[in-house]
Amino acid sequence: MMQHRSLRILSFPLHALIAVCAVAALCASLCITVPSAYAVTAAEKQAEAEEALANLNAMQETLDRLSAEYGEAIAAQEAAEQARDAAKARIDEISAEIDYLQECLGERAREMYRSGGVSFLDMVLGANSFEDFATSLDMANRINENDANMIAEQKALREEAEQQEAEYAAQAEVAAKKSAEAQEAEAQAMATVDEMQAIYDSLSEEAAQLLEEERKAQEAAEAARAAAVVAESAGEDYDAGSDSTAVAYGDGNDTVSRAYSCLGAPYVWGGVGPYGYDCSGLVSYCLTGEHTRLGTTYTFMGWTQVSDPQPGDIAVNWGHTGVYIGGGQMIHAADYGIGVIIGPVQSGMIIVRW
Image 1 (cartoon, rainbow, N blue to C red):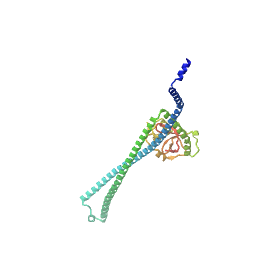
Image 2: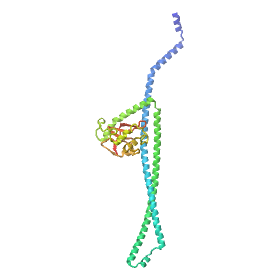
Image 3: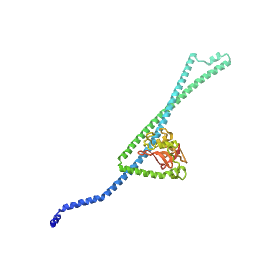
Image 4: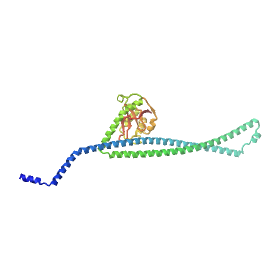
């Protein structure tokens, strides 16, 4: 019986045996390569997160630039509109003055027509004395001088009116141009925001988590540079860890208190609150307490740089800004998807005071 069973095993088809061995080998191979495949996937996710972070940072820089350009265009548009309106108001004033002078000159012309005018001979013959003659002559000269002055004034007003008309047209053109620039910046910003949202939406959960880790690592690197930024602004060696100037919410510093009250608010391009802010919109609100734009990073860069940074001062570079709260930290509308947070003063920033 044993011999028969052995013969049956030996008689198993060779091609079937080969197939079984091949399947076994394949299974073994798969078991060996699974960890390797997982490693590749992790690396791909990491690369995806790093690429997403780079793209988001680049887009945020674009948003910051567009925000500044938008704010400058709006400010220029408003200034041009004010100049245009001032020119229009002056044109209206000039028109009223010209109408008045025209009426006066018309009345003088009608008066002279009715009286026939006063000739030199009339004054001589009609004078009872030299004193009467001198008085009449002086009065006639004054009347003629007044007429001449009104005519000269009317001419000057008409020339000024022409200048104001030209100024009105020029300022109206500037206002329209700046309005178009602001609309273009806004359209570009909205397209950028949509693109950023698309990046967030396309990330897998794992890649999104890695993205946040990359961001935290980037923030840590920025924190390491923050002390040097403040030290450079203060003109002395600086240790953020020993800085005791950090201000807490509600301590009486209105600017800082308002900044703390905005923590967690979303980043909204062009936003000045209360439902969202961009970086300069947040600073504008914190400084004034009003949900209107005080300026842009370009505006803030023109303010006086301080050598003694204090909570409530403004940390700013050409692309970003925030409210300095001490300890090398600021409250700022960080970027899209993060919102208003506490973070380190960024490299390249200066500290200015309103």
